[in-house]
Length: 111
Ligand SMILES: [Zn+2]
Image (cartoon, rainbow, N blue to C red):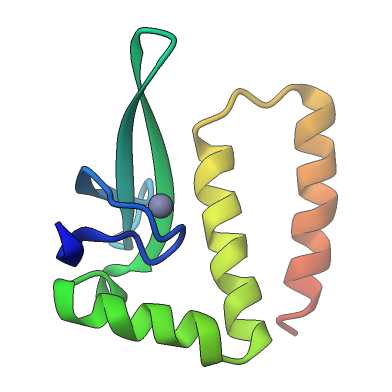
């Protein structure tokens, strides 16, 4: 079990889950924590990052990067994680408008 600690939250995870971003070849990994709450099984996912960092050995590298890496990389990891979470949610018109505003600000940083 000691080899299956989540590099995000430090808790043991139940299994790894691979997801593909719609319409792309980008793959991301999540550590899935399955736990019981109020008599029901629930899942909590921790974003681990793209494939490169998700194989067993590089998990430590990802963890190290999280601890030592520069803050821009870390913030980009958060952004990817946030995007993945938003993909699973129902966004109303107000949400989408705010998202567009944020996306436009982010896009302007790439110029
Ligand atoms: Zn976790």
